[in-house]
Length: 167
Image (tube, rainbow, N blue to C red; front, side):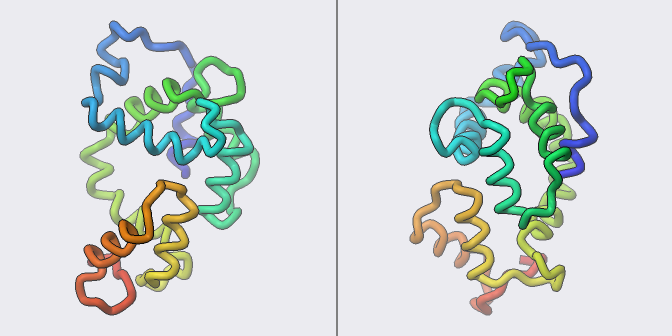
């Protein structure tokens, strides 16, 4: 979450679709589809925008309420290019392209540990299957029960009922 707070843009100008920096030139169609799906999990009313309250509900549900309103406001502002107080799907895609894709190599090294840490609330090095499923539900990514079971079976290769960082 620190990434949001430290990378708020000071010059929030829209990037032309003709620009090499536009997300359509950086992301392939499958990536765009996946990012749109992620956006949809933040937009439960399907309004086409993520309001501060929607963003707050999802982030605090997932992180357990450990994020201040000020930090959440900064996160939203870092994505809200037009300054209307909401994040459109286009703004979300551009933010993703600017902030996530640029750091792919570094992210590939850090992401598994950071992601694991988000699920490992007790910092004990393991995640119970129940906690994992609970966190997936909180993310509203739309996995069915069967898909969740398949994910768990793929990750928990030893069948221990717990997921360790090594898995």
